[in-house]
Amino acid sequence: MEIIKASLTLDGSSITLDVPFVKVDEEKRLVSGFATLDNLDSQGDIVTQEASMKAFKNFRGNIREMHQPKAVGKIVDYRSDHYIDKASGEVYNGIYVSAYISKGASDTWEKVLDGTLSGFSIGGELKKSEPLFSEKADSIHRKISEYDLVELSLVDNPANKFANVLVIQKSD
Image (cartoon, rainbow, N blue to C red; front, side, top):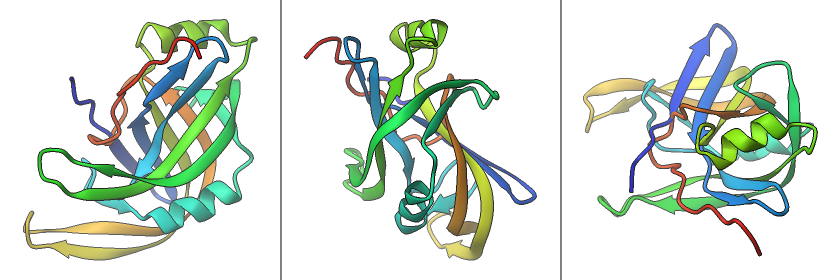
């Protein structure tokens, strides 16, 4: 199984986190997977599950493609969940989402089915963070404890290494 990494980009008060999705239901046009996890990402940041639950609760639910201003679907469900890293046994907490891809976004749906769009990426506004020292990495990271979620995108290059495409479900 190929591991696809996630990434977080911070630009002033803007935050973008790219994360792969896990499941595709071809008949219902549903895509499921982790939108975010609380492991250390490639940008040196950790987004807490609590911050993400609050952000998703206040989120309109729109889905975009590659962070462009093009609506391609809607979130139909989200929940807190965990991911276990099989190599280390560590458990990470995050938000698992299911999203409907609109019939008006056939090009986006085809990119999901052929694997071009293989992940989720959150986009929003950073509200609260604090420095966090990691002895393991011998460096300081940022722990994000509050943000406003503005959009969730389907992307080609997700950031979080533990939020991989694990299952593609093509029918019930």
